[in-house]
Image 1 (cartoon, helix red, strand yellow):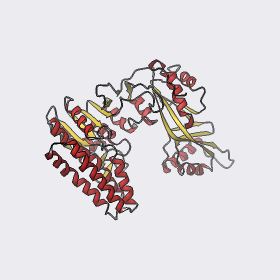
Image 2: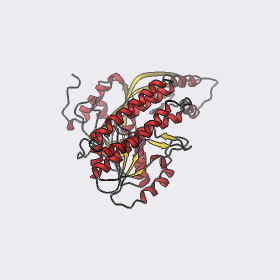
Image 3: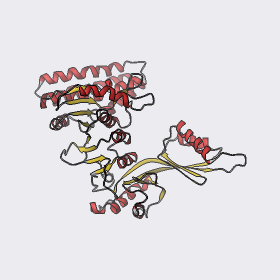
Image 4: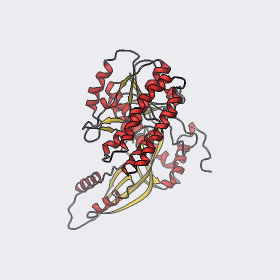
Length: 458
């Protein structure tokens, strides 16, 4: 079986929905199709929850009617033009979902759980439209798998791996058809209390890799509107090139530091199960995309990614005559404080009496951390920084990679270098205002054999 996930832009219009249906129908073998909401719908549902929470009931009602008009008056007639029966079936499928949104605008005891129910509606509507599209245009009746019947998270908000497999595998195995097509919603799930919830970070991509792990898929395909993962950010650097092969570790490092095509959490289920993940382009299905697996091209730098909104916290231990706090005790105190303040460090380093934390900027949590550490350390913070992750197969015993990287940015002030914690990346922390220049220098220096340097700095 192959698992195929299509994101919001891939199903963002009636034409795109028909194109995806045709693409999927022509892939041989057993398939599980995982869908996001149509592009823009989740944002509209978030806006709706905000209007209800703030008590703006009239505006919330108008917002639902705007959604109803978009789907019933525009998407449905265009998607099933000339097919009145399927227009009627689509309206019958969508109307209860839209009515449930309208009822929520009258809910005076609106809760966080009600918010999650609203956010689930986008994926539900998209899968309903896709099922009818497959029936009408491709002659395929998909086997509908309701995500709420098998996808669950624990009390800690993590996927319940064993439960997912126990529930989903029998549903799939009872269908013997060698060309069976299963259809399900991405992103949505139930929590440990049985309430409607979602997978948060990674969303539908996470659903796809969890499903792939549960059913022991041969491959997981993530379809977007670009040709795989590129070796640099095309919004910053001209003439980037797609990376054809990455290891799971390399992909996780790129995702951790800002590569938007995949969230790092999504990679872990595929890595655990040893299932290749292929990143493909719905606008050019024949393009090879990027293959993520346990196999990679050795001894080479693959790509660069960047993460903004970072800060560096420096803590220098005080030498107090009445203090007998050891380095180990201080680290325990520090990590407990970060956990309590919900600070997730990207980098944590220690040298002598100094400790450096690189984390996302937070106007409340970071000052609170420094305040908590005041009895033992002098603290300072530097903001408006970015992490650049230079990723590839380049362990410490492979000589020369670090020299080439530093040579490329010899005209850029580097606040911090992290090397050795992973054989897949070297991290540079620089001022965000220097990010574009650094990424262009790195691209020209490291990937000159793949491109002609462009005039980005002119």
